[in-house]
Amino acid sequence: MTGFNQKPKLTEEDFYYSPEGYIVFTEVYHLKRGYCCKSGCKHCPYGFDRKTGKVKGK
Image 1 (spheres, rainbow, N blue to C red):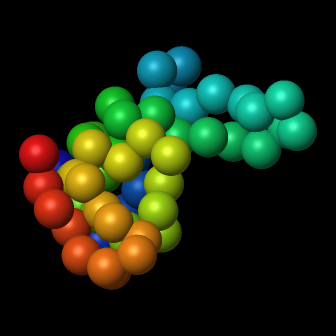
Image 2: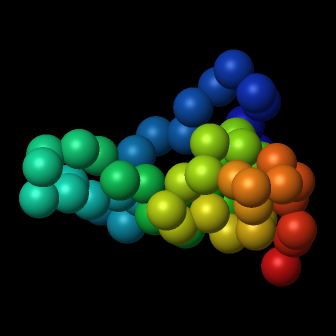
């Protein structure tokens, strides 16, 4: 487990590049990180709802 200011090392399963060239983090990465950043990430496993600003949880 990493702390809030520590970032896990990235592996092939942690991200991919979008057609526009952006890094997109996968659900695997978010689970390794261990918390929801509340940014509305595409693959958020924590169930964050941008409209309500709350984490629903799965």
